[in-house]
Image (cartoon, rainbow, N blue to C red; front, side, top):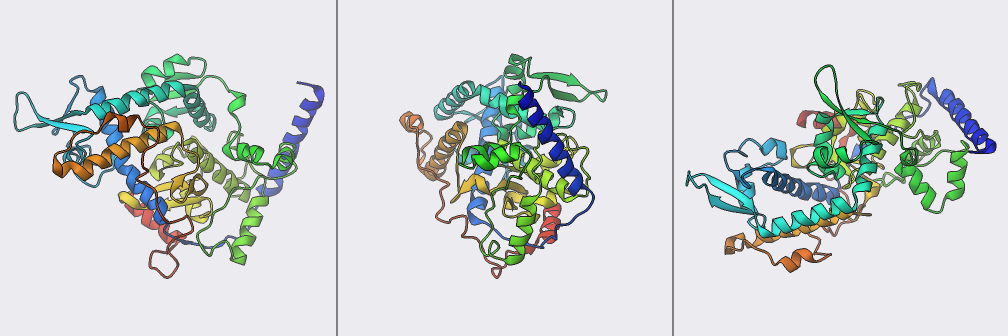
Length: 424
């Protein structure tokens, strides 16, 4: 690195430090109380993918089984863990194109389930995708660890995020040991197992917002940001009617002008009660959700990361306070949070290859559900091999086609938080 570049970096750091100090001591932005508005398109996506995730997890459990099948008795208590609203046995029988039912060899009255040929073919395609995009997976996992205070995470917090982050089912055995220069398993004094980041890969330390501004034709603004001369704006997509309100515009303009704190920077010197810390929290949550391949996850999963990510106790109120950035859904008896910019007309803007495969998985599921009454338990392999299948989740509604304030689904953001807390 040249002296000029080093001096420029020091100047940028100094300027950001001054900006931090300027905004640290008080709250100057007037908050606007917004109502929660239901979004049919995103709720439908969450509803659909709840069953999809449960089916994928059951598929992985059958693959892990030494016997090659699961009994109805062994999965009877899994309903809550899978996020299902129906018993697991009924769920398995709903999708005969994925799960083949047969009687136990010794206990004829005990139903057993193994994977169909279609499910096995999908599983082999999934393995191929994990192998092809392994470096992308390593980067995504590294970035999650890079945002934590200690560069470590307990496995009990990381494993629930496995499906959302696109990690292979057996990532602890096959992925982590292959990258000793990136990851290491450690055991805390309490006996809990942790995953630790071994080294800091500087090339990963750029957030999704920074990359977006760099690549979307705003290079001049991004270069100014790198020199510490401007802030980066979060993309906003408000429910219908909100964006035009003068008080909301004023609030968001003030918020966007605050310095952007990268989620990969040390934030322990920022006043926890300041506007700057609030914008930093928005940035961390935005980045975590950007790293998920479906651009959403359960709110409880994020809560388990609160301490390591240096988030305030009531950080989940951010989701309802900034409805132009986040969407909070109450579908399927849980609370799910998504970033609005990740979706357009109910579909992912930039789907990961693993998401494409999961769309095919859902297509096979739906085929079994539609034709199960006619005894169809198979699906032609050529349908699975197609790169594109009919998207069962596509919706006619656009992001703006949401329920209005007079349709009975609105609630004050604080009331919404209380309702969510009651659900979880």
